[in-house]
Image (cartoon, rainbow, N blue to C red; front, side):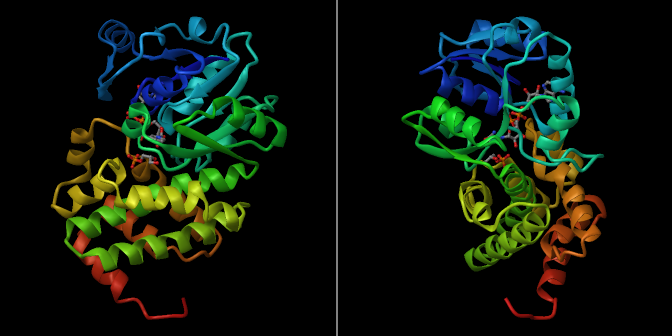
Length: 326
Ligand SMILES: NC(=O)c1ccc[n+]([C@@H]2O[C@H](COP(=O)([O-])OP(=O)(O)OC[C@H]3O[C@@H](n4cnc5c(N)ncnc54)[C@H](O)[C@@H]3O)[C@@H](O)[C@H]2O)c1
Ligand SMILES: O=P(O)(O)OC[C@H](O)CO
């Protein structure tokens, strides 16, 4: 299959490296200087540890990248999804479409599939790729299992089978909202887990955060149309555990650095990558409040990120809540 991957950050580069062992892959970077450097050095500045396989064509022209593609995979940050889809829609192409970004669009509080439906209302062969997957491990070829979800069951099955590889196992699902919701909210909870670890609160506290974080994901996710089983699977519990415990997580790292007393502005300047939990926290809180859904961890993270609450005070307030039935 001819695949165009749009977005040459850590995740786009890792997916390109993985898919290139079994497909013809073109990787598009919106920044011409980035594309030129990537084409000549074969190293992405977002994933410098791994050389990009020679078979991958690097493009700075979006039109050239998508002209012959049978499948487009948008792997930009969620904030770039709408702009990238609009740019794609300007060309006379109708390939199948997947997106690999996780999170809510800030400002609209839309999940990626809702952004896709707004920009490409007639596209039906579309779906979300999500699950526990650090880019570096995927690029190294370390075993990983993720999910491709589409409302079109036949398309979900066929695409997962086509993308599936020995080291990147891809399950299918039709629960697009559930798959995306788990991937969005786990990033917010991972910031909390990073704060807990940064403050040295211990493993008991981390386990409590993961479990109560999952309860928040399920409450909001079911209200937004996801199914409970999805949240117990790879894109829910699986990704939550990975992101809350893995040192490679950028969202968890934001929490660790907040706990050290750094400001969000300084942390985001240092990170060099997107941390989607920062963008998603307010949409998650707003969607929950509009439905009277209790999400105390998310509320605490919003207070730390945007209201100047000191991380240790946020923890004290969480612990001071009245005990209740689990
Ligand atoms: N890195 C991972 O381990 C990983 C794994 C699974 C999913 N994801 C998700 O994939 C998405 C991308 O993550 P990443 O790790 O590649 O981030 P990154 O910070 O490494 O790179 C972000 C990329 O998005 C591009 N971009 C941003 N806005 C754009 C726009 N308007 N048009 C075109 N390109 C744009 C940037 O140029 C950059 O190439 C995120 O939503 C993330 O949650 C990441
Ligand atoms: O580094 P993070 O925190 O953006 O997490 C990356 C992936 O989403 C993990 O599945």
